[in-house]
Each structure stands twice: as C-alpha cells, then as structure tokens.
Length: 418
Ligand code: AMP
Image 1 (cartoon, rainbow, N blue to C red):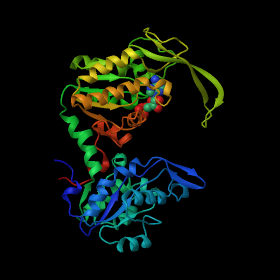
Image 2 (image 1 turned 30 degrees about the vertical axis):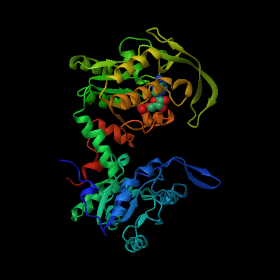
Image 3 (image 1 turned 135 degrees about the vertical axis):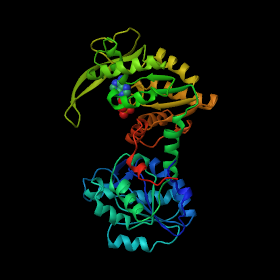
Image 4 (image 1 turned 180 degrees about the horizontal axis):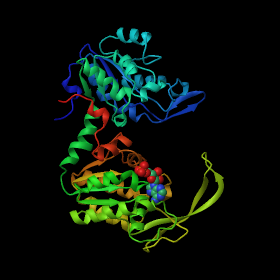
C-alpha cells in the first residue's frame, strides 16, 4: 500500500495547507537577504501548478534557518515569497506570521488558485517541540494537508507531524506532493527490487554516518564501491597505515563486519587501491571555531599499500577511479551517496568527477537507472556540470540517508494511505 498523493485528492475550492522545504541558502547583500540557490523553490513548482490548476487555495508553510524559536529578520521567508512569485509567474501573498487572527483572515479571503506563504514556522519554539496547541492553530488554516518537503520529513515537528495528525483526526485528507511522490518512488520502490547489477557507490566523511545504509544495502546490492574518507577506516581495519587521513579508529570492527557480510553474501566490495594524498601544513591561522587551519600541500598519487605518516588521503586515485568506472558501466541500477574525496577543493575533485561521469555515461548509454542520494553528491554533480543527466537527484540530506537506512520517516508515516 502506497501513500496518498495529491493526484488522488479533490482540492478544488479547498484550503490546502502545504509544507514545503524552502530552507534556501541566503546571503546578506546591501542590507537585504538574497537567495543564493533557488533549487528548493523550483522543485515545488509542479505541485504548486497542479494545485493552482485545480482551483485549490494554497497556504504554504516552511522553515528557514535556525531562529531559535523567536522572530529573526534575517530569517524571514519574505524574500522567498518574492522569488516564488517570479518563478510561478503569478502573485504570491505573504503573511507576517504563521498563526493568529490576522493570518486566518488572510487565509479566508483567498480565492481559488491563489497562493499565500506563511512566515517562518520556526519563529515559534513550539514548531520543533511538535506542540499540540501550536499544531491545532496551524491546522485551523487548512482543510487538506500536503507535504512536499521530503528534506524535512525525518523530523517530527508540528508542521510535518502535528498538523497532519490534527487534520487527519477531523477527517481531512493528508497527502504527499509530487516531489514527495518522486522521492518515495526512487529512494524507496525503485531500490526495493532493483534491475541488476545494482551498484552502490558510497563516499563522504564518516563510516559511522553511513554504516546503517551500508548494512541495509549489503542485502540488496551486487557491488559496493567505497570512497571518501570513509575508505580509510576500512583500510585501517585491514591493518593498513593511513597517516593523517580522516579515520574513525573506533569503527574498524564495524568496517570488518561489513566486509565479512559482503563476502558471505557474494557482494563485490571494493575500497580504493590507490589514493591522492597531500601533506597537511599548519598555516598558523584559526577558523571560526578556533581550530587550526591546515593547508594541504604537495598533492601526489600514492600507489603503495600504506599512506606515509605525515600525509593524508584526499581523493581516490586514477586506478581506483578506472576500476570503479568498470563496475559502474555494467550497472542497471546505481545508487550514489557521498563524494570520493575533498571535492570542494578542485585539486581533489577528480575522483568524484570521474565517478560522476561514469554514472552519467551508464545512464545515457546503457539505460541504467541512476539515483543520487542527496547532499554532497548532488552538489558534486552540479559542480561537474552533470546535474540533470542522471535519473533522479534526491532533495533530501539527512532525510535521504534515514530513508535509505530503511527507517520510516515520521512526516511520511503520518500521511494517508492510497
Ligand atoms: P558526507 O556528508 O558524509 O557525505 O561527507 C561529505 C564530506 O566528506 C565533504 O565535505 C568532503 O570534503 C568530505 N570528504 C570526502 N573525502 C574526504 C577525505 N578523503 N578526507 C576528508 N574529508 C573528505
């Protein structure tokens, strides 16, 4: 049984209270907050157009930043409303608050097809506390609840869980939006019975962040490719010297268990055979948190088993990238989460870009289904100019990971069933 999606809900003339993820990166410029990247707003347009075309009265609910439960001018959603209006090509009204009489008045004067954006729900401490009274006040604004904020669905807050619970209790429908539908389809259904070979590529900083994902995918994947700093914990578990590489020495047992599970299940499990390494040199400067800033000097390829004592691994090497590309070229389903190195520095981005290119080639040339599990891999694909050339890029970070771990997301559980 799937989740109820807006396609199956009659929204005409109804007040549709919709949770969206408009937590966009912003920057102050000449005393004004300017949006740096409007992708998250863009992603909601199909659902909004669907609702508008069907004569819904749309009330949008979102959070921005971490205002600590009180109004904070730099975290107002007003600039988001202006951007949304431009992107939609129609006027979007803005409410100075998200609850209260004035807001209710504004909501009740909406005409069919009109859109109103509420002010940041996190201006109230009650949002993150999932407070019942606050949820009831918000729920008063809608007849139907829609959640199109996959990226916030792992949090049990008022706008993601409390409000739909109140609306469902009084008999109102609670449905996923079209973006939510796509996220559940690609990160859920498509990976449940993947076309084989199913190749999983995992990278990023820590084994501890992704071990549950590794564990679950070991049950499903044919091939698992490990890159990023995470790989050094696997190497350490194998008795390899990793120098100054980012590692989690207390996770070597976990890494060993994953490797042995892979062997038992016949899963091909590859870690890098060569690495790009560099020497961290203290610059004498400190970052905002007071930590020493290191400059990574003298990048070079290391093909030896051990990494020199004073060096650190910063990317996979070319032989590893080529070996990974061979596996990726044979895939019919690909899931990728996490960069292969410190890709934010162009000197250390080659391995990540090589994997990105292999994933795109497999998608375009072999008809492989490629699913990018959110966060930094999406960023890396975009930096490589390859965004949009894969089958699906998740909009979630933490939510995608939790979903891939097999956890039920509270903001999804609370939606009605189809
Ligand atoms: P995650 O959020 O776990 O996917 O981790 C992403 C971060 O891992 C990025 O900021 C990368 O710079 C970082 N990362 C990847 N490889 C390495 C590495 N070899 N050493 C240090 N950090 C890395």
